[in-house]
Image (cartoon, rainbow, N blue to C red; front, side, top):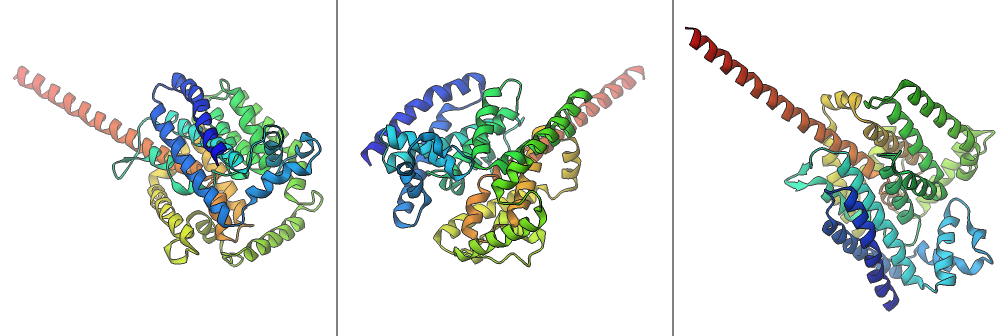
Length: 404
């Protein structure tokens, strides 16, 4: 464990120039807050490390995998093997032990929070409040988000990849390295999630309110179609579907995954659920009445917050907002809804649901706070219009009084 403690301190030092570079680009960024976030996330790395000592964890097999390969590039394939590919040089050549590799992965997951924080802040005009607290800061410290992104496994890396990629999409012409790095990580771990992000980006770019030449929108649409055709067959094979009989293989794979997940414990039968009920289960369960264990009870508090935040958009004005929302909002909405729907067909275990939804909840939370931001902007504009009207009426009264 001593090696892991030394590594945590070293990685904190390595993080400082990276945070400083972001602070130079974004004057509003608070390095102190991100440093607090670093230690908070490392605390959850310790919590997950303790959890792994008492429960079965895939992190052990990920770490020991380097013994099964003769060459590093033997593991360079999308999916689970990619985590083993990342683990190999650290475990084989640098002599990292299990503890060190766990906290190195925690550090990777930390940068998902850094870039999602930057994405939120640079796309909002105001700081939305939740009962007097800064909502964005509160979102960055949600416990469940940190627990499942703080260990050696796909969770930390896909979350970091999504954060980096989403940050890059905010300003694609200026952040090509972020697009390449984030896109690469997402593709190598979960190609279908990258696929959903690309579709969301295309929809947001075409339907966003930004003034973009028509020919550029059509080029983006054609590019998205071309990429879809190019990766379609490989994506289906990766997901376990037969490209020649997608519907039947989808039904078979869905039934098989559902059976596997139900046999894993904490099962919730969703076969008879309607789509809205499936989505509710995926987004908001477990709640206090159906929490399977202490972890489920802790997650229930977070789910209660999600329900409260979702209630903010049940307004007619939300439909009006979506029509005029910028590209990043529409992209986030498409990514969240599309991935949620696809996951509801294979998720039937609350433990897996808790873990998987942590990858995408920030997209919907961004849509919600962006809507709150728009509402506040409209209120300020309305107050300004009322003030100007009052001033104008007073001016006219004075003019009439002077004429009399």
